[in-house]
Image (cartoon, rainbow, N blue to C red; front, side, top):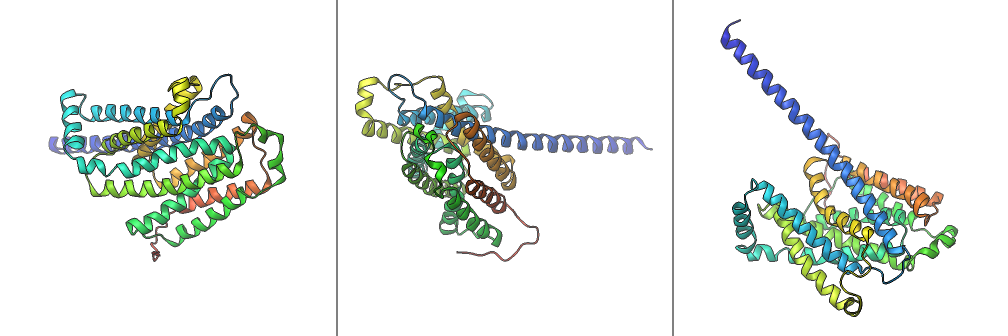
Length: 350
């Protein structure tokens, strides 16, 4: 074999080796991001529920202040990610932030609408988990798939396939079963709830609509511009902090003046705040490295874990056969919505 041929074979083997390593790393990142999503989603729901029902001496922490702190932490995390993308150069970071945010005020202002809606949604989640057990909340909150789909069709002219429309019907049926009244709802465990199930349900439904609209609006903005998702999250966090502070002083101003901004904060509260701040970043990683089917698997696993832990640890939930049927339908709908058959069928447009 000639030297040139040997050299060519060596280069080809190196390319194959690099390609194999790249694919392996991509697979590892995919499952790592999904694992983190399952952990973050399950942990946030359970710790938030526990923190809102735990009886302690003194005032309870204000959920409105927790939302503001989470937004500030999200901004900090995104700035660090932009700093990393800027090759850890402070001058480059300063220039990027100045050029992409300060020098483009109209582009930045576009994020005020979804940011305000996200702030409302984050506050509603605290209300929902103060009134619903973690399992019921997790399953019902999957209605955001329906609202996101409907807003995608109306705002982005997105076309949904037959499987996706079928999944939305199954989803609504499953959530209806989960919310079906039963004798078990009168158990003593419900006494630990901070309010009524009706209030929790209304809070979840409004959060689903706000999540769907804000998510689609944000997606539309991302498609129209070339700014990185981290820059966009900094802009979202900036407006979110402003709207959040307005909410703190409008709704909790009296309590704030009496006991301070960080009243009732403990280690568990800070865990909730950090988990909420990480939520958007984890979803961004999943969108980048994973697909809809694997994301559906992560969501389903999170629902199952929340149900088990809510029953065995928090002891505020007694599952019924109707609940299990509804949960199975919701999990099936989640998978079906992300299913993309190879032979492309005729899409249906609403």
